[in-house]
Image (tube, rainbow, N blue to C red):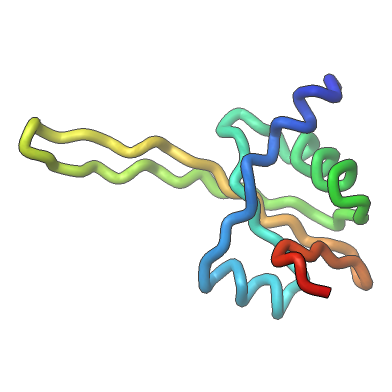
Length: 98
């Protein structure tokens, strides 16, 4: 796979209450990814960028919400999230604290 593509797959971490609970309970990290990214690309990107071993990857396609404005209706963009489960003993520090 193209190295440039692999480095652009991850758009950023997804921080929410649900993702925080998943990180604490199941050693999972949630990322926003490109809508056309595959599980293999996501796995390779996480392993290359953070130097950890990935056990599994699950993806969720989130539909954009319809919104009404005074100009009519519109739609937010569709997004894709990846739940990345790390192997035991592996950790990614997204907050910058030791």
